[in-house]
Length: 297
Image (cartoon, rainbow, N blue to C red; front, side, top):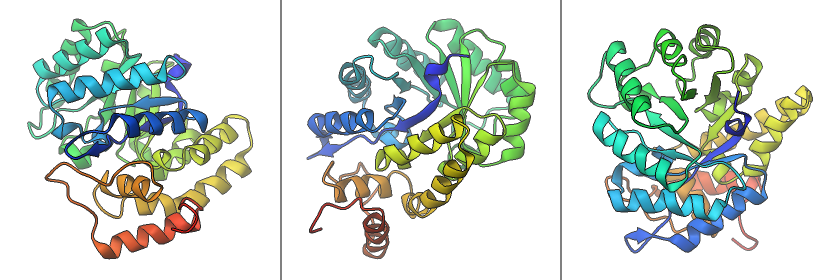
């Protein structure tokens, strides 16, 4: 198993200012992550509003993350698409730029069959040598990659793991049981990170860790160190923050939360819009309870 793709990994937001990428804010966010124990970074995922980035912006965000991280933590570039050809183009760029791995969402909207999913990933794996991490999130894509398909893909040499965001622990259990030994299984669902660890998972690609990287990291480290009581305490302490991060469509709450912390501007790309006032107040209350608001805010 490649341990560098385990632990607390953050699905980074992409900060915007006046319609363009706010590179200074992005740099501050990455430094904040590394300083607080994050084990890896994912640029250009769902949380990074990748669907609204141009090719040039996508390339720039990946390159910036690699440059700023400077090998201190691994960078897993989001390069998936609902087009196999486009996925290959994006993944080849990530490989050339020096990313440590690529995260590939199941093709959305097309609703491929299980065989179609297998052939999609197999084709990408044949075209690049970079490690690949599958990403299953049926709530976003309308397709569920079944454990049997993941197990077949786990036998391909550069497919090293999966981000599992079904929230279904039976499916995750089946995936771990059926896949090759050493295949990495990461939670893509902040609410179930600790339960997933207890059945053999290896970490999380987290939304909440954008705002509370230390707590997510501490929970996973406590579990790995055998301190189950501390891990469980942090799991339950984090639940209100997780709920707040999904009070509206991700990444609207997490980017708004980072704006409340003074780290980024709460600017989104349409069709995402700013948070409504009632939900913003609920989010602010939770952020205040966690001590994440600046003094005087």
